Length: 226
View 1 (cartoon, rainbow, N blue to C red):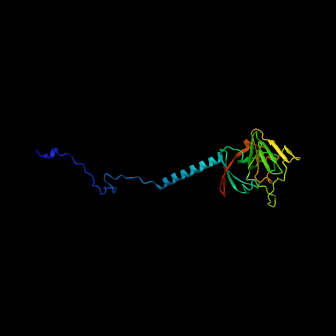
View 2 (spheres, rainbow, N blue to C red):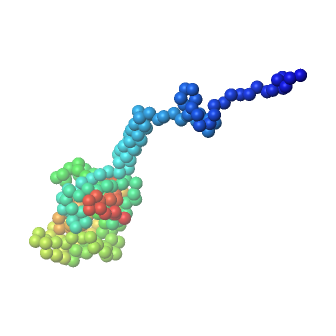
View 3 (cartoon, rainbow, N blue to C red):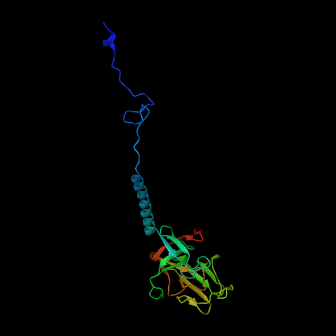
């Protein structure tokens, strides 16, 4: 009997290193990979960009604000036209710089955002001695290296030119004393001789609900606030 019947059929394969009849790469090691189209790449890129922009807008709308300093009341810490980033997530404490929404109809710049420094919070007593420019909170003298006590010629002085219009000032002693109501801040500008703040009826005590945010960053020149 011939060996023909014992032969198993042999499966034809294309030799490795040669091309298939349709011109594609062949061999058991070769796998054809689909090419990514330019349109698909651009779509993915634009998707990332749009997502990033929307996320940034939501963050700055809900949690952060960009504000511009208007005026010289915070000199020498902040100067006119400098840009600030504020956050309403940060806890506000005495010594922090805040931006708040002014709503007093006495203030000449009604309905405007104002930047000042928090000196005291609710329940604390503020005492200001105008002869020396000293500020006490609950009987403790504040260390205020940021304060500018200069007259119009730039000469350093130790007193403030304007007496406060808020109740609590004595012309006999030159001392202003007040206690901050619940839910309020007592704020002042660092440029003490040129600042409408909680010493005046134009601003008065600041309702904590009116605070837009705490200053966390100054842009150009860069500065991070604690």
